[in-house]
Image (tube, rainbow, N blue to C red; front, top):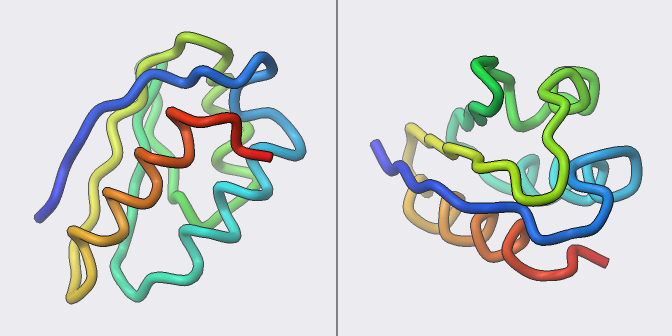
Length: 86
C-alpha cells in the first residue's frame, strides 16, 4: 500500500475540469486508488465520487493506492494536485 497526503493548490479545487483530469490520470494505473477528504472517501477513478468530496482549494487529500503500480500512482496524483492541473 502506498499513501500520501497533499494540499490542493488549484483555485477551484477538484471541481469539474480538474476533477476530470485527476480521474483520467487515476485510470491510467492498474492499482485500486481511493481519495479521502472532508471526512469522505472516494474511488479515484470515478468522477461522480470525486466530485462528492467537495474538495476545494487548500483542502488536504489523502491518496491511497493498492496494486502493482501503487507508488507511481500516488506520486503522479500528488504531483497533479500540487500543481495547476491544467
